[in-house]
Length: 296
Image 1: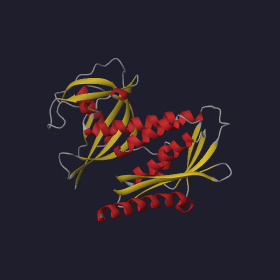
Image 2: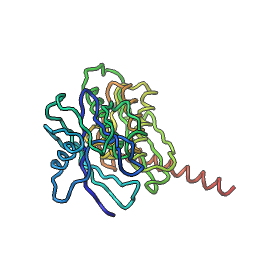
Image 3: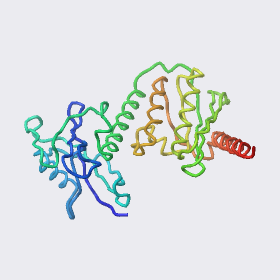
Image 4: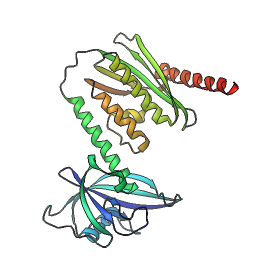
C-alpha cells in the first residue's frame, strides 16, 4: 500500500469553521467543501506546507498553528493509497482585515457551524476530521457537566459492563451487572447485537447499563470496564476516530445527561468476569437458538 502525507487546517471564528469548495479534481471531490491544505512536498515540513497552501489558495497567513491530530485515511478512489493527515488548529494573522482570495483550485468558501454541516457537501476526509472535532467538543461539554455542582444525594450504583465479538467483526453481545452500595447484585442483563466489532459491543454494554440504571432510579453511576479504550474515550482522554462508534457514543452521552454523575474506571479483565459471563451466555444462547432453527 502506498502512503502520502498531507496537512489540513481547522480555522474557526465565532463558532464557525472555514471550508473551501473544490473547483477542480476528480469527480468524488469536485464541487464539495474541504478543509484548507494538501499534500506535503518531498523534504517539506508540515507547518511550511500548511503556510504554503493557505497563502497560495486563499492569500491567508498563519499567526499560530497548534497540532490537533494525526489520522490515517484510505482513499476511496484508490484502496491501495493511504493518507496520513496532520491536522492543525490555526489562527490567522490580521484577523478580519485580510480578504480571502481563492485560487483556481476553489470557487467558493463558507464559514460553517459544525452542528449544521451537510454531509453530502463535504469530502469524505473532511467529514472524518470534523467528526473527530465534534466528538471532542461533546466530550469536553460532558466533562464540564460532570464538574458542575449538583445534588448527588440520590441512589448510587456500580455497573460492571462488557461486550464481545466472536470474529471482530462477528456475532456480538453486550452485558452488565449492577450492584448497590452494599455490593449486592440488583440487576443484570445481556443483549445480542448481531454482527459488530468488539469496541461497538463494549459501548453497548455501557448503554444497556445506563438504561437499566435510569429505570432503577439511580442518580449516580460508577462504571467498571476492562476496555481501556472505552474508559479513556468516555473520560475525554482519547478522540473517537472510528465513525462506527460515533452514533452509540452520542447515544450514551445523551443518557448520561439524565444522571447527576457518571464515572468510568478501568479494571483488569479478571475483575470483570461476571459481566463477561453475561456476554458469553448471551452469545451461546443465540448460537444454540440458531442451530436449533437450522435443524428444523
